[in-house]
Structures are given as C-alpha cells and as structure tokens.
Amino acid sequence: MKTKRHFLFPAIFCQLIFLINIHGLCAREAALVQTRKGWGYLCKDSTWLISPQFENLEMNKTTFEAVTPKSSIGSFSEGMVRYSNRSIWGYYNDLGERSIPEKFDGARDFSDSLAAVKKINKWGYIDKKGSWVIQPLYADAYNFSNGLAPVKVGKRWGYIDKTGKWFIEPKFEDAFSFRENLAAVKLEGEWGYINLSGAMVIKPSFELAFNFKNGLARIRTEEGYGYIDTVGRIIVKPVFISVAHFSESFVRVRVNDFCVYVNQKGQVIGKNKFRYAENFSDGAARVRNEEKWGFIDTTTEWLLKPAFDGAGDFVNGIARVKNGDAWMFINKKGEHLFNKQVFEKAEDFNNGLAPAKTNTGWGYLKENGEWYISPTFEACRDFQETSETLR
Picture 1 (cartoon, rainbow, N blue to C red):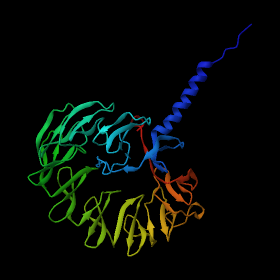
Picture 2 (cartoon, rainbow, N blue to C red; picture 1 turned 45 degrees about the vertical axis):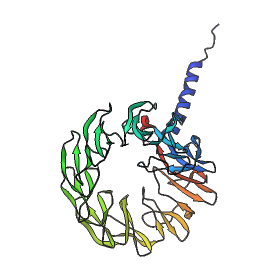
Picture 3 (cartoon, rainbow, N blue to C red; picture 1 turned 180 degrees about the vertical axis):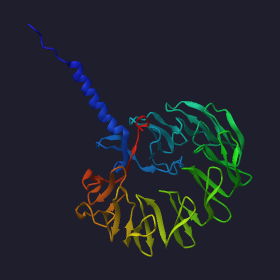
Picture 4 (tube, rainbow, N blue to C red; picture 1 turned 60 degrees about the horizontal axis):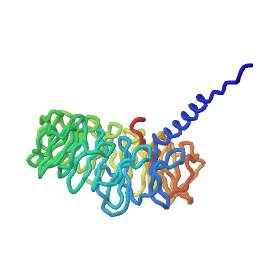
C-alpha cells in the first residue's frame, strides 16, 4: 500500500516567500504620516514600518542638530533614517529597527555607507552598525562622496579618505562634498572647483558656487547668478538676480521684477515674462501674473491661462489647482478630473500617488481618483524608497 506524501517543505517555503514579499513591499517604500501620536513611517500595505511617535520632521538633509528638545525623524538615505530624542540622535534601519540607539549630539544622513555624527563637540564617522570608523576629531564634517569627505580642523577644510587619512590637507576656507567628480571650495575669499585628485580645475573666481548637477553648476559673481559647465565655461551669463535649478532643460531666472526661462545654451525662450514662475514639470510650468496662476508650455505660450488661486506641478498629465478654498485635479485641457471631487488640501502626484485631505483627514489618491489609502491621518508626505538593496 502506497503512503501519501505530504509536501510540507514546499508549503512552508511558499509561506516564507509570501511573507518575504509582503515585507519587501513595506521595506521598499514608506511614507511619513502623522497621527495623534506623532509622525511615523507607513508602508503601502498600511502597516507601520516605524510607529508614529515623533513630534517634528527633519526633512532638510543639511540640518543635523535639533533646535528644540522635541523628538524628530528625517528621510531615508541608503537604507537608514536618523531620528532624535531630546536632542540626542540615532538611526533606524529599513526593517524599522532602532539599529543605532540615540547617543550622538548631532547626525547627518548616511552617504557612501558612512554617516557623520557628533560626540562631545567633535565630528567623526560611523558605519551602519554604529561603530566608529573614523574617530570624532573634527570641528565639522560633511558627507562622503567618491570615497572622500570634507572635514574642518580649526578654521580650515580639507578632505579625508575612509581610513581617516588626509587626502587633501586642510587649506580651504570652506568646502563641499564631491558631486559629479568635482567639489566647490573657497580659497582667499573666492570659490572654485577641485577634481578627485585635488587639482584646482576651475580657478577660484566666484562669490558663491554650488554643486554640479547634470554637468552644470550655479555660481554667483558681482553681476549676479549664472551657470557654468564642468570646465568652467559660462553657460548662462551671471547677470540674474536669482536662478533656480535646471528642470527639463530649462531654468527660470529673475530679471528685475519678472521671471523668464533660459535654455542650456543660455538663450531666453519665448517673449513672455511672468511675476512668479516655477520649474518645468511634465512639459509645463506653473506661472502667475498678478493674482492668478496658469500653465505655460516649453515655448512660454499659454497652455492654460491664469484662472486659479493656487496650483501645483503637472505629473503624468495631472495637476492640482485651487479655486477659492477648494483643491481639485485637472488635465492639460483644464478639465476637472475624478468625478469633479474637491479637497480641502492636496499635493502633487509622485510615483502614482498624491496626498489629499478631506474633512476626515489626509490619505493617498491614485491617478484614477480612487483612494489608495483612506483619508484618516493628521498629515502625510510622499512615499519614498527605504531599502538600499532594492534601489
């Protein structure tokens, strides 16, 4: 007589795979959400990655010390997120575990697998286990990038490698982390750029200089703001009161009381100028003349003429606009979407979801107008990737 075989192992294996997949859904993306208990990280399956408990948000990555004794939490970077409790800092990992308990007087985000942290008025670097890799010896310290980090000793900045050895001796008055193989440094009152060998490849000649992005960097001279490329050539003449970041090959600049748009050749596009303007997104930019907002295309001609009391960016053909006290979503024809639903507040879509508020609270809308997560929260932010291994 044959006995029945029970495939116990495959069944258990399938259950494990299911559980791993569910956890993976949570670990890859989570959003900062506020309840009455505070801020925490919510997964897309509506489970908590980090339970709501924090009073403040530390969204600015350059902010590293709490200005109040309240608790706070930041954004994920390389699978880790910093938090503070009564001005003492630690880190959660992407499993929602308090992997590095609070014990530091200041903390920055992880970058290049290390984080700058402050202990007894000196900065050093730790790994993701919380162990010291570089002892706290510095007056200040910024993020590692390309294996190098700017640190301050006395009144001068230099660059160290991941063993703590000086790669570039401290001689700069100020210094930034490397971006796109170049770093902005200040020497004798002016800013220039060095390469990864420490050679000054763009001579110090600017009043201000910023990080490179997509081959361009914002700079300021006596005449105003402009842009240079990676060899120091002027791309956008530094003659403007202010310049934004390039977006979709255009940058908005301010000339006297008006904004115009400039392309990557430094040419002003179109003939129109606007009182206020924002960056291009999805082939359109929101602009304001006098009291109303509208949208223009990449020739600066009107896509939708000014008619709105407020507006957000177009994303996948959908934008939020405000009429009176009500927010709604429209397409590029100006048609009211989602069965003409209106909301108390709303934010732009990001990766298919938009935070929106009704009289019951904040939740997340899908691009078809259906609720992905019902509106029950005090506040919420966009979903972000949390797991370094899944990026």
